Length: 239
Image 1 (cartoon, rainbow, N blue to C red):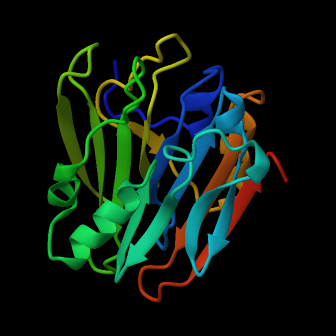
Image 2: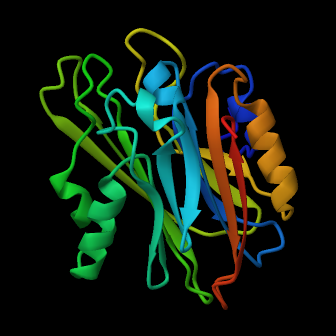
């Protein structure tokens, strides 16, 4: 096993019917831009009734058909926000928890201490979060997963990973290993992934590799740390 192997994103998701929600953070191969991507999938009608929208540079999940919303508590939230030069990406309303914590002077991991996995037994969906420090001199990113320590959801295990942003390298974390009942929680550390320099090629490779029956939405952003300028791509199955 080569622990430094760096596959394309398509190799990591193709053939997996249900990785759930996923976050990719990294740096383009040419070293000029930070990369953040977030996707959602859905099996139930409630989960599939969603789209991504962008407002004032922030990304939100919203219902596609408001009349069909069954339970908004775990599916409607801000997925991407930025505080100063800190880009926050998460799979739930802990985006706001991290944002408020950073404003109060807390670290990324300290901000998440008040949160745990989602209360959706028997799955106990983990909360996955990412923070990109858009420092031109020393860009770095952190990733976190909060997950149940056992099958009964008796307590929360917390893991935080910190990486220097190296050209051409990214890391990928997702909520589930694959489909199942209950859904098996992601195991191990975030997966290494190759990051190119073409936002369209990266977006297409990720979207086309996600299971066509379960994929819902994808958002990708390539950012210039020096200026804050960025390109973005947004794909919604329901639009």
